[in-house]
Image (tube, rainbow, N blue to C red):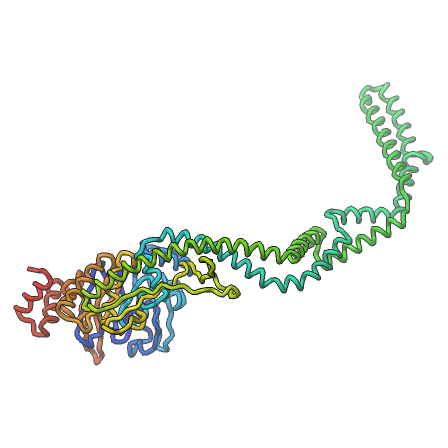
Length: 569
């Protein structure tokens, strides 16, 4: 719902700031007062093409800003999330245009592209007239209108789950097929790398152990010299450490016999002797095992060299090298079994195609049944709106798919049928408003008031299912008057029970049904022309309707007739 609208320095508008209400809002005004400018400004806000000519003469920038209540508009909330904007209860949409024709778009003060603005705008407003925001004039939306009218959303939701699974598998198959040549080219390389790595067969942690063993083998002479020297010093040399400790221990024993304070020291001296003897035995044993082994030394050097070469080629560490070997091994195995993997995927895809085809066929049957009810409702509405000889049909057709083409398809019977997230059907509305003419696509029908009445009939039939909260009708009364005008007004009033409706009109029969009434007025000051939008009081509404009935000269009889038309006493 549109809550407020601000237009500044746009064409003849210096500044308009207005609050809107729910229900039916009517806008009237003299020809040339600027009603079309108001609609153009709304179009700019919704993503229409911008032009520097729209900027008011003598100003640098035009601004159009709307505040929308979007609490119940799930489509807008989804679009906000998709465009990385935070969902909120209210949405400020702003478009700025400078004198050079450059424009900027904002959602809640965050800059966005015109494309995002247009997408959001299409979900906020349906603008009927000479504008691009007529959702029913875009064939791609017809299937959604038909489905909403039919109310079989559970079936569509179930189908979409199957379709998503089919799409995922199809994407995986396509990705594999795109990798086929690359895999074949890499297969021989992987085979060479695997053989090279497996020839060495690196093991986690072995490098540290080899380097430790290498240090020992490279230093056997030094190790022998040191261990023998230690043994001599501790045990075999004259006046060895052990001999001196024995002498010292005996002296401590003599001291302890004189003074008991040295009793504990005797034990400590004995412990020192034991430690020295154990150390002497350890180095002697180690020295006896020292052996210079040039063959083993060379083998270790060669092994470390081979590991070093592999690390340089395939990984910075042994663990990374082992990880690389595992990865290319899996890819090599996959490359060898590529045809089998593709065949496996194709079997799964074919099973899902049949499931999706069955679900899609159920939806197609429901669409065909729903289309008959929709056609009847719209023809009845068109007759009430002064188009009694109309023909309205719904085209529902499918397209066969080429098995060799990369298109999403499901299987129905023996045929492959193109499919999308909503099923296999292509839906488009066709209409003829004149006797003897074949129905043509809705997008090609006549412009002006007739197309607006067609839209009104469609919107009336789809009122409860159409999710666009604000509907704006421009030129809906072109070429109608009297009884038909009254019917148009009543249709708008009925539509306003489900939507916020804004209509620009010249007909008193429509204006008299307003919940809120605005007048577009043009004035001149300081040699400049300005357009403004003013909310009318009850008395002003009566006078405005009387003017629409009888012209600028308003009489008491005209006011009385206006009150009667508006249902007032």
